[in-house]
Length: 150
Image (tube, rainbow, N blue to C red; front, side, top):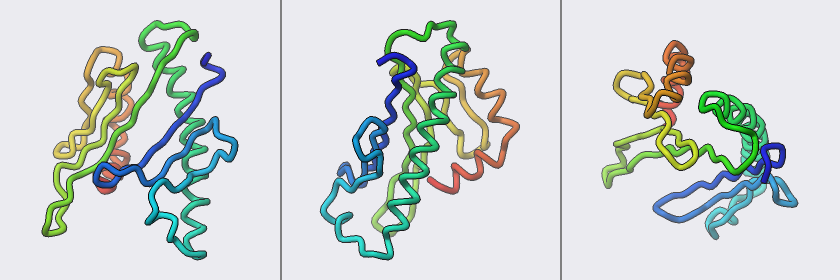
């Protein structure tokens, strides 16, 4: 697809099992369950689905802007296929503790930038990512929020 025809896909996994999916090009454009145990959510949980749908719709719009920015950083044209991938998560140990949390991005299949949870700064993978690092490092509250999430 051309840049104007971008597609945003979000998937959630627990223990290597996909449990939710959002696809901006789907007919419903809604977050949908992908695991049987997610189908068991009751009426009260409808707010969860609506909230997650709205979050994903907003994220899809912001990623469109982010993609335009990255094209400029790398002096690339609007044509062709480009990807931004956000990956975050953690390990849950048998005692219930969380370890090895991570929050990172890739661009066009290559590492781009990652949060250093100890220093609450960002590690750029290449010179293009240094632009993003310069924007994110002063915004410590973003790093704190992401660290708390993972």
